[in-house]
Image (cartoon, rainbow, N blue to C red; front, side, top):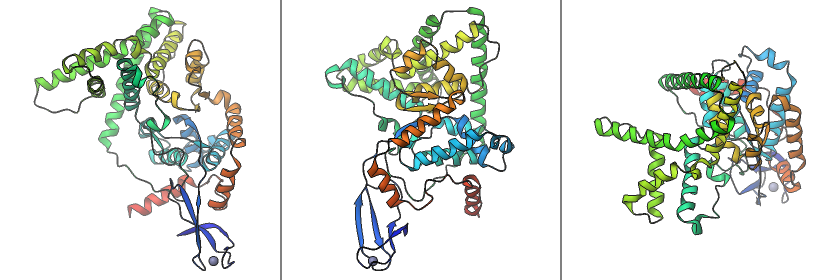
Length: 424
Ligand SMILES: [Zn+2]
């Protein structure tokens, strides 16, 4: 299969010298003449895309904009920002300047959505991500914990080691995009969705109870933050202990919870560093209770986000946290260290604009935008476009068909038709 743009063939001069279809991730591309069969291979220039995380709020509004079946379609079409952001993000993704990885947070939020439908939302975040995905939050926390623990046990070997972006992503975010996207549909059962809804509801009830306590206790920001950070590791120990007590007391096999997986992983880190088997677990428990564990980006950032919410409660806020607040906390504290920019909701962005969280987060260098700073977000994207290297631009012009940079108005409608066709 050969794709436009067709050029004049260097050998037979026929205007049928096209690009052999790309599936994405190839290190080079091939041009072939449909008239005489002449072909040539060109290397792709290396890419250095910015990682821009767009949260569910943006995804949801773009889905409403593009989905004629959404109840909110008319309202969102009245707000020019959503059309602009859809076009600009599409353009930057296809200019290979930006990667917008999808995440489990997108999946979960979308499964719980009624309108727009899950399928519409999934179409939008896959459109932006090109299939590149952040690993789940437990895996990223585990990577941070393993590195910090290994550094503690063997500073000479691990002192300089860092977690790279590629370590927290599946799929290469700096890959060249394919002409077509091969979509893998993951089937989801109603039971999973019910379970997710149950967990979400339980989590929201717990947070509401904690919020009421924050309202009455009026503790200082520093005290809440320290408490939240200090209880993170011990809660992992507690969950692990409970799991093993449960396993001992019954014959029913249950998959170990993420806490137990983390404890076991850290135990092998200790053993690999030469800690004798019988003391390895003691070292793990010490580490989970230590300041070193509190300093992990995931633990530090989430403790500050909870302290920010507690400060709102103590200063008289009556409105309870939104049902997605805990998800936002996990998403932001997990992903922020690996992003160049994030588009998030106003409340979360507000927290990051206040001290001390502003300074704590600044060391990671990610820029945060929200609806309140939508103009700045669009300027930021324009600036990224101005920085694209000339060889990347000329390669894009050589490889992709005319109209490649235009955002498809029928994205969701076309995906829906494809699904109907495939199910027949
Ligand atoms: Zn030819």
